[in-house]
Image (tube, rainbow, N blue to C red; front, side):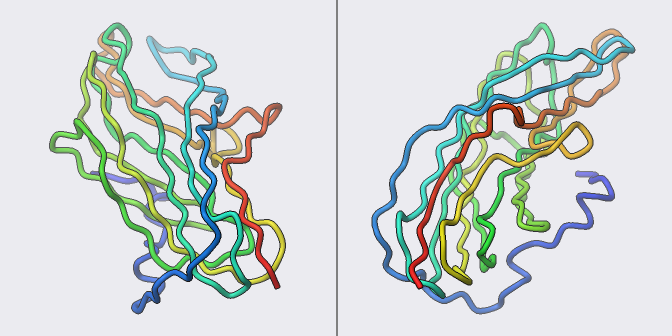
Length: 209
């Protein structure tokens, strides 16, 4: 899959640490599905179309850990169902979510997913943000689920560590894809980012000194 320059600049987490210690035992995780509102734009028939969308994140993280401990956070996004009227074929699907500020990445793995066909999935990290990409192709009328991301991180201080859906604008999207425009037979971009007027915290972990 061809990547943009910004994607090429990311560093895979696996390269950050050759030896991964087992995560420490921590307080049980509390999990809840969290709806996140996104502001989106899609390029079709020579113009940008603006719209809003809601995606459901399911993020699990321990409620409490001691300072210096390693622990796991799992991130899962609700399935995609493609509207054949607007999404006859989709490629290069990307979703982004943050690692907790005040933690260091140790390792990241992908698991699960469904109806991914021959798509290639990769996960990378850049500046505390995880980026999961799926090359596709996916087709109109299809429902598919991207893999779950499990990140192992190390708590480097104390306080409350939180995660949230990533993305700050159309130039820094937290969800993106390329969709076939039947009027031109070209693949055009769609970009989305979380609505800053309605921020959502996906997980909280208290780090004890």
